[in-house]
Length: 140
Image 1: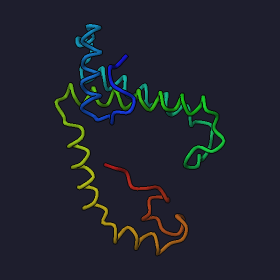
Image 2 (image 1 turned 135 degrees about the horizontal axis):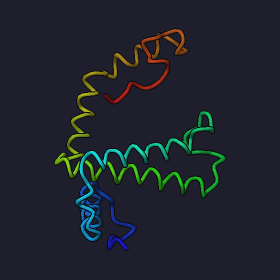
Image 3 (image 1 turned 30 degrees about the horizontal axis):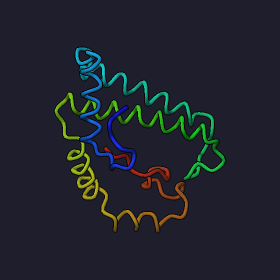
């Protein structure tokens, strides 16, 4: 279907090319404005959220999940990724480079030494409001 072997590593560039080809073959480029793609992406994030909505906290590895639930999760995660890749392509943003830059900026904003010290000061999130209620800092 895609012409890519299952064993080949998947890159953002490969996905970008596949999505561009997919849209072109269907004459969908005329619909793929940044706004439309963003709204579609938000819709897919909503569908992804529905999977977790009533499950409470879910441990890593998704123990207890049925195989079909994991397959469905993979499909929704893929929808989000594909719209994000397409949006970045249409906007002329190199998503891989932008992501690497953002990781570097976050490393400066949240130095490992300081973050580890904050975590070691408090054993519970309630005791230390600077830990963002126990959640990891937003990748803003």
